[in-house]
Length: 467
Image (cartoon, rainbow, N blue to C red; front, side, top):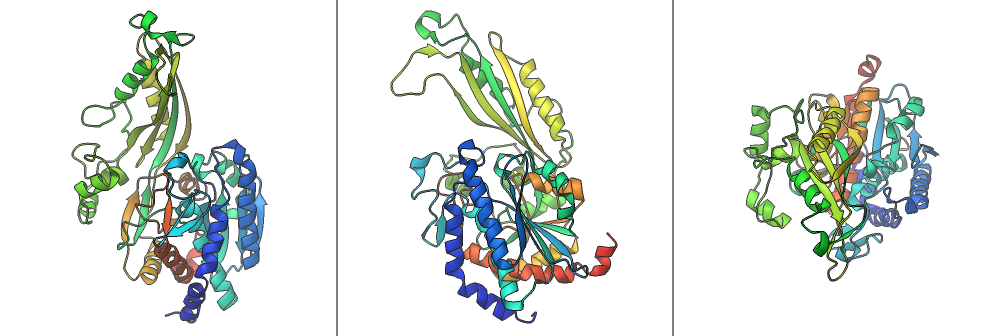
């Protein structure tokens, strides 16, 4: 055991209530990046994080970007120590629909061993885990065993559109030996896990227009094509009866599952019927012949995320609407090229536009998938820290989600990365009643406190000088 471990952990455990108060203060700021009305809240949240880092002893400031500012901090410039870049995000998903929340989304309500609120686990709580652990080292030992750069961005939930341009602008500030990302989950409450793959992401906005204005469905039904019907047909045409995408070129670069991955996912405890029941669906659905966990972590998807058009108020308004809209997204794996997928889906929709309507497609967001090598010493260090924090060795899993900066760090800086999040699969991220288990929150702080020691040992100076 490293000297002062017990004193370090004792400091953390004595500070639980304070950590909860700090998380409540972060949750209370509605930093919704998708809504321009919350621009001031974004600034407030980033400022609060900068102030918190300064209290710990960091050199910290807001860094302007073409969108929401970065909350940036730096501790240590010792060339004999490794430099670790810790990434997180302070922006959150919109809270709607409000009526499905059991407690206000921006209050941070503690009940049944959890803290509820938008951003509790995604990602304010997991950012705070690091700040709490860093503070514990500084207060107990007077220093950190590594140099640390903290980067907390404000646009992850909208695809980080300005992230790479800001990284390029401040490139000199982000030179590091390793990136640590805590924006992921474990396998379940009893199975800690390290994430070794994230999927890429592409978005489309589809608009189908018909008549120049809404028409009386009694007079014009049967004469004019209904844009909602046409849009539904277009979306349905993207997949076959086996739930495979039929767009030519969509699967280019997506590797078939190898035997090792098949063995890995089948070795994890998983009940398909129980999962369906927990999700509230009659049965799971997806690409036939592929294990559900493999579908979720290692296979690409194409989904409709929203669809609207026509009258949606009380009662009935018998019209043929003038337009209908939908939002689509794809999750990518392996070497799939997001630009190629973006164009392939757009061209397919335009080429198969139903007669009698016009189809317009806009696209955005082109994040690549990333696979993290398990043989890097930093991954072993993270596994050791997680075992010390949760009392059990972690398994290696993928995540169905996408974290755009993971690809940016890989492509722009060639940084090895460790994805060490501690959320639970049922934390309802992006949904009403998002939560963070207090056991995971406090265990995560202890894990991060151990992680910095482990990384100091795993990245010796001779390896750093050889990079």
